Image (cartoon, rainbow, N blue to C red; front, side, top):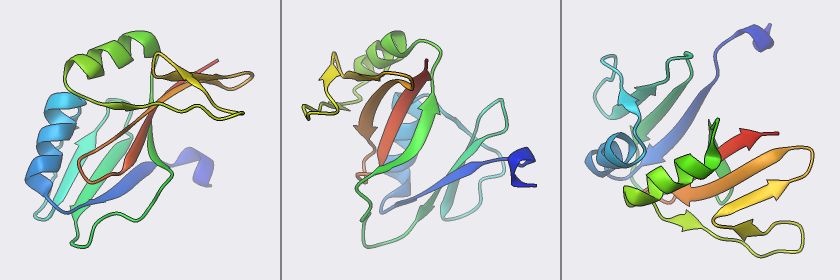
Length: 127
């Protein structure tokens, strides 16, 4: 049954050295010792993973590709911004960020940023 298995996000990168620097130094993820050539594997204590693999040609997705769960999104946004992460701000009828964070009633709060390859990541704090 899929509800009992691990979930892993997978992204591409045109420059794995640059991606490793971003995810380790700016986002604060831990590179797994199981990383293999042309791949970066980041592990979370809860067993979830992010796999970034090298692929020329860039990224074509324009939606959230990875969601990082937060217990304190205000603090996490401040921390990431202090490490150079640039957040996306939106001002749409159904979605508006205030201090880089959008609140969706009944869902939670989110903030979005891009990695060096333009992959869109979200911080998410459920309600």
